[in-house]
Amino acid sequence: MSKILRILLLIIATLFAGCNKDVVEINTKSAITSNSQSLKISPVHTDIPVVSISASSTYPMWDASNAIDSNTATSWSSARHLSSNGVEFVQFYFSGAVDINYVKLTPRYGSNNAGLCFPLNFTIYYYTGSSWVAAKAFTNFANPQKSDNYDLPVTIPLPVTVHASGIKIEVTGLRADGPNYYFQLAEVAAGFDDGFNHFKWTGNDNAVRQNRINNAGSDSFNPDRIFNWTQDDRDPIIRGTTNAINPNIYAPNIVYNGSNWHIYYGGWDNTSAKNDRIFTTVTYDDFLTFGTHTLVIGNGDRRHVNNETVLKKPDGSWLMYYTSLAQNSVANKPSFATSADGIAWAPNTGSGNAFLNMANYPNWATADVNGSNVAYLENGIYHLYFNDFATRPKAVHHAVSTDGINFNYTGDALAENLVAQDVKAFTYNNATYYLMGMHHNRQELRYSLSNSLTSFPASSFLLGNYNAADLYIVSMGFVTNANRLYGIIYGAGPTGDLSHNSLHARWLTKKIIFISDRTNARWGDIERAHGPNQVVLYMSTVMETGRFYVYDTDGTTLLYTSPQVTMRSGDVWTYKQ
Image 1 (cartoon, one colour):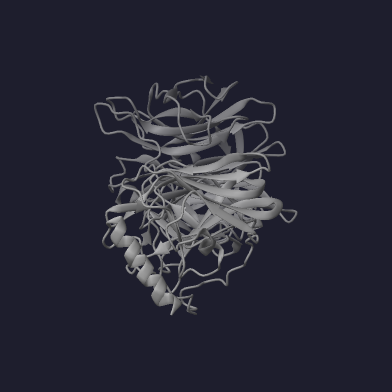
Image 2 (image 1 turned 30 degrees about the vertical axis):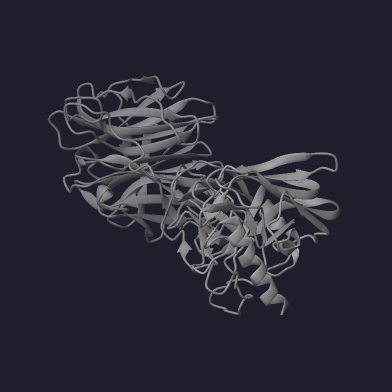
């Protein structure tokens, strides 16, 4: 009988208010039904009990207490407004001051599963005991959607944990139901969940249908977790300078220099001639921006100089090895240059007077050392890995030196028809691992991991090309510092003549997945990175409630599952283990 009376009173109130299909639409939302396919995780209740609630205004029979009765079939509503510009609020209190790091607002949902009169513009305040302090503000907040069997809350993590005895939601932009505007909520809550301290909301950059997750890069080297390679969203990451001929840059070699990174590369850049030369560009912000393209080794009297590898030695001096090709020759040979700062090199042009010497290699005079010229320095011994395309093409050869110029061939480090590109050392569980990267001018990079500098086991697949723009991979260099493998920068292009290359980047990142509690949609299997530390997650809607899952850099080891949270287009998060 009371339900019939309530309906009659609401209809009468509506008639007097002059609205038609308005706020008095009967809310027939049912309680949550069990559906194991929709709910991935049983909810953990961390809401703090609310002891009182009040509001700026109340529509008849839609009391503020309806928003804390644990029944989403009842709702609180503000008074009617004739435009969206009205100001309304609801505020609720706890028994005392407590830590709060999220606020949960359950909309009143309509028959089409869309929110009714959920606020458009609003600010969340917390009460210190003497004043209200703004914690987070929203403009043009997307209208929430629910599943068929679950009245999903909008769960909003706060930027920082606050110590508060109350929460206020103040609205300055209302949504309509029919011709009139209201602020309505089915339930309000707030609480503390330590999970939000490990996945913090840090802002919104207005990116359309994207979320960005910071601190999602690799950790200290683990040989079992080097498989989740994520393409940079700037593809290619570095192009050659526009000039009279098509830019063609490749052969990257990356060196960390204290507070910046030097990215060396070879090719045609800012020239009208097809003579390879060697350049560098410097990044001071971990590969987000790059400086000018500086020529460091001109071709001089050589036809080409390229395939550089650069060592910053323990005494602070720099040493570069590169391949050079004489004007009337078909056999490249390794040359060298030195520098005090990694920018000014001597000699700074290719010359026949700066060759490395090689002992005990058969037919060194006719060897063609092209495309592969890898140096590694350890305990005063220089190791050189090279390929010979003229006389012994199907192996990666190894030589050593004590002075960095006069080398002695010791044998083959890898008996495969692959082009060695880089060797870096890491430690894991008190063992040293040497990582060699290789290509074969096709759609993939390969690697070999060894505990020895003189012998590497059979190679394994590392990564494949991303799309048609990097169909032919012709070079690569690891990005490393200390004991971390950040990623790979590689030279690649779309054509088989290998003359239209640019530099692309693939970063070793954690895998970030979001699964919607509304639709079970899964986002993150196709993701990009923006530099080595940020993952870009692509959305198919502008807002969704669900959970984030963070996997390690193998792509399969689960590290973290977030509390239920609402994510919107442009949200930026920071993951903290």
